[in-house]
Image (tube, rainbow, N blue to C red; front, side):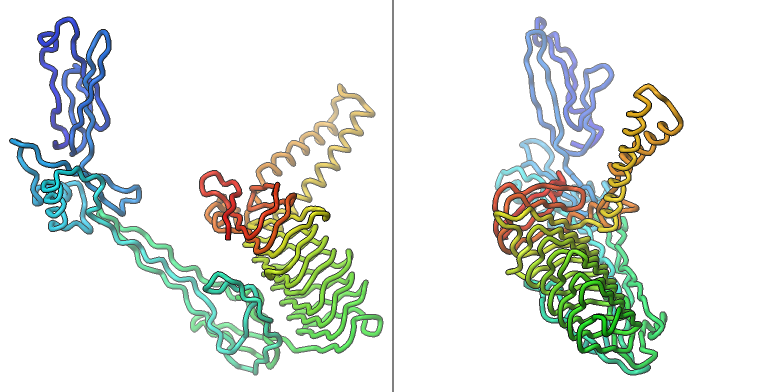
Length: 513
């Protein structure tokens, strides 16, 4: 039946059964006339009759099974076909083709395919439902720009390999470059190619993103050619894969102690020994520490590699690039790039904007690991230690802001409580109103603060649904987990599991590895 045609007309219901008249009801894709005696079809398709009997009346309803259905994105067109009925005009491929083109199908429609479907429906006497007869052309998204290095920079630990494993090879440190030597070339992003849906409408592609290049005074970048050169001889430092600097190299063979004092260097620094308690090291480039950092402060504007460990409550480590160490016991580490833990992390707080990856046999106990991206660990917790906290897809800066608001809230609530104890509940002053307004404001800000990274302009749902917490070993009960704004606590020991967010409920869910 074609759209707009009359399906049923109720001419004289009383003549059939005067005591029990008929009434028409409109079903799906049908329209009942104002006098309630005619049903019209709203779509091209096949009518389906149904009847419901009551004491007073017989209800006749007719619905339509649409001939054509389009996917929500208009990238696919499906049809439903019924076998031909005796003494009724038979649908031909040409008529069907004309109907579909009339409905706007422009891309992917072939007469031969339609004729084959009609022949199958007729010969096999089967109803064909939702048979695909046209598909659009998907857009080809552009590729992001990237740096193609002209020199061997060595592996970047923590990189995901094709087999799903993580590359934990040692980082190649202190790569030398000459003056005017080409370091890398930024390969421009591509625009991609738009697609087209079955109606012939253009489907826009997502252009590739242009990688911003950050350089120091010791390098130069030609925007037109994309070439990055060293302006002097020195040591290459690559921070977060897009920030390039060239430094001199400073070598300190022993410990950082009273004989050296605090170190503040514009260069890349190699320290053969240990940074003793109370001392501070600041570097403009990469820092390679051969020993331990013991209750020391490190401010590294490049990448940090610690061959030993980080020990002590007073340890305060800040790294603009990646951080790579064997173990950490107490203290705090904040990295803008990735963090690699090779052995263990006990009673410490580690926060990174990039991935945090631990080797499969590593041990995490009573520690806080917070990653703005993915988190991969070995064993977490023990029967006797306080629980660890693992957070992925959480912005450390947003989280620190949340803690700051918590502190402010406790302070203001205590001030309000002191006021009430002195003046009573009924005393109204400008001071009390100001305190209560501040409390309400902080509660609102805390409730609406989105912890997902880069979510200032949107909710960050597309990003957070790709984030995972992977546990290669055993995770003990009591461990606290967080992905984005969702949290949960593990209530039984688990082994070899991966946690992510459910696409629909946004609650944490787990799968076995």
